[in-house]
Image (cartoon, rainbow, N blue to C red; front, side, top):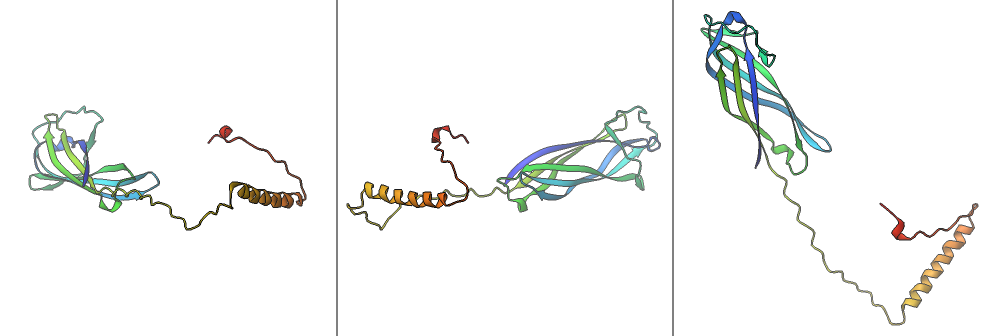
Length: 195
């Protein structure tokens, strides 16, 4: 199997009334996706489902001015002293179509890392591994020698072949002259033709 790896890095902030998150107990990031195949690529679209249990210290104030890089999580379910939240991180990946067995694609997350900063921001990182099987390379076709059963007699020389071609051309000329409109015959040298 082949592997491509990338990183997810998301920052979350919570309402001031909760205080600051001080401990992360259980964090899971699970990819859920659908795949579509077009002429050029295999597109994976869906979400990374993030679920987390955090402990908060209501006595610790978080900074009020935060950058726009943080996502505000305003719905937290409380279970004793822990807050539980879920979030859907967008998943949109495009892989080259050639060389991949489409049914073999797997996405797995690993190395989930949580950093709880003093300013109240919860930063979650993880690596995503995309595993897939490569299509087997097609074996090149083996060239077989051409075998002919026909025998050219010495009487069928090149002059006889030219005579046959001339008779076929004269039949074609007669046919074309019988058409209602006349035609013009133009010879174009092959070295002037461009592709």
